[in-house]
Image (cartoon, rainbow, N blue to C red; front, side, top):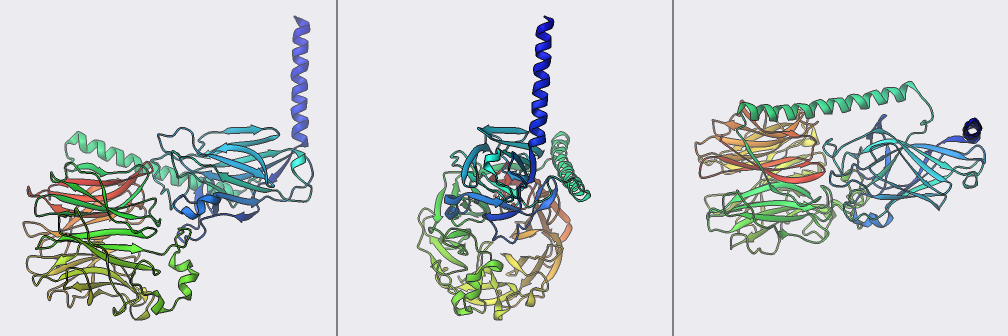
Length: 606
């Protein structure tokens, strides 16, 4: 027995000595120095991403919303120089996508070293883990974990699970005095399209500094703040239920797996049916957006299957806003965005060299075959069961270069003409001016002419006046609520008493949010609904409504009500409302939760 104990002791000592010698023979090198190839560098809104050390630049694999990139779904970079030819461990910081709750094991990623296959690892890890294949070993040291409800946006806020990756290579895989080229490629994963990997631009992973510690503390502070916000949401919901003060009936109208949905537009027909119109696409910014419609025959309690009413291939139709005219015709204005390259990558105007080459006349459009933004109308004479071909809005004779919208339903005038409010870009070649303008049609949307400028912002000094929400009241007044991008993000307003020909000077209301939707209630009050986006307008985000008792001359912020206060990022809102025969309001909107998108409805008593 003593001899066996002695042998065991000697074996343990030998193992410890061996491990110690291996550690002494191992060199540690910074795992990131120069980026070689990556995707997602065109979006000016995504310069930095948060990880466990704070805010930093990252380089990612392909975005699933860009179809032309998926055949080269990888990122590659160069490490720091290897001092000696001996076993080496490279340390770099990376982030990976957060998995949906229903997926326990995420997509796989292939790692190559100097063009040679090394190993395969798994995305979305939430704990320390080591993958080993032959002489190659990759250890992930988890530092920050997100969950599907953490609230970061799946396209714009690619934070994810972050930590330190330690890649150990044999001496045969490195050369003294030279760096190593690493490449991570995402492998196909049919269950879920949204997997990604990002290497972060840190060259000091092996060092401990005051700066890195401060960054980690700031990241922790932000996470705690978000946790407090989520606690507030849960507490307010529970308390409202316990106290019997929850006056709002919330429901999900529509969702479709991981498809993106926005916004929600609603039409109540003369036969009592309700039509809901929304855009469905791969992502918020993707070139496959189609406008779909759902029909309810019981006032919005249940909904039928979706039908596509506007779906031009490789054109991003962003929204459809409609009205049923007096003769029963349904007219829908469709806003489309064609600022995508051949791969399907969005060409943001500030980073678009092709647009900068075009003359002003070239930038004008007549159909989706041209660049930039546009709109068309479609109509139905059988309550939305069949639709006409698109009638494109020609801008050649309009006093602005491009248009966007509508984002609210058109209005029918007593003489049978139709007015539609849109955004007019670059009036008089003033590229900073984002104005709201009124268009007029006398042939039920087949052709349009310029009627007036609702609100203009020369030079963009006031933050622009965009996405006009409009209503024609019982007195004939046309009241407008306007989105504004000044610091307050307040809603501005104006009105016209001469059928939209002239407008009162625009003024800033006390309401914060965007965009506005306005209806007139049976009792004469005006109701304006708008979205509150988390981090921009207030935290948490939600849907709010406010009332005017004087035909839109003023808006009393003391009447503001919160329909929803549980939205955790910016990709929410765009509410529209109708008043039901029983007097209650049905407000529809879009939101996201757990990495999925929903068209929601709230029924409430005004």
